Length: 184
Image (cartoon, rainbow, N blue to C red; front, side, top):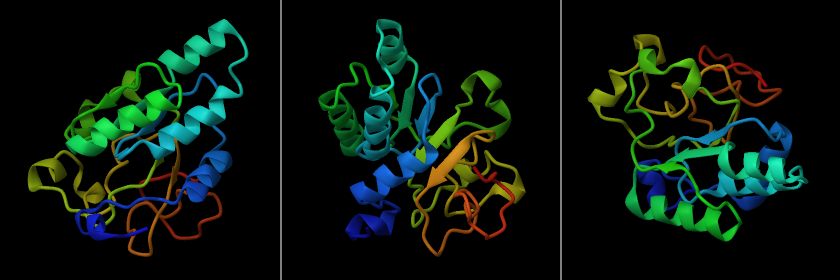
């Protein structure tokens, strides 16, 4: 849904859509899940609730709590709200990075920083400063829809708008061509 925040690239995905996206992606316990632009943590919360049903032993609960979820949110209020949201839903120590997820050069992201699943609503309407865009090869730059370019090799699900120019094809069955994502 778009409101005044949408003018700066912030969109709030309705909970039923988030729940559907998690169900379609169907993350498994032991996989790492990232939302690089997590806002208030809706995707991570739904993914946590999805995986919680799979955590039926002490060791599986440890994996769920310590090794499964990562997020990023550059704005201070949503950053705090995402942590509170995850805490209230049972994640004991949310790992949300308070910086811009695009601040790292693409070439500097190593195998140990890759994740299995990306669930996100990229900041479609917002624009990144030139310093951030310069972190990516020319063919992967765009002022819109660049939030997930840094995590290739993952299953991805993103809610996308008709203005999405880089992330079409990220949802199973999407027929739009893409150079930067693989179909799940």
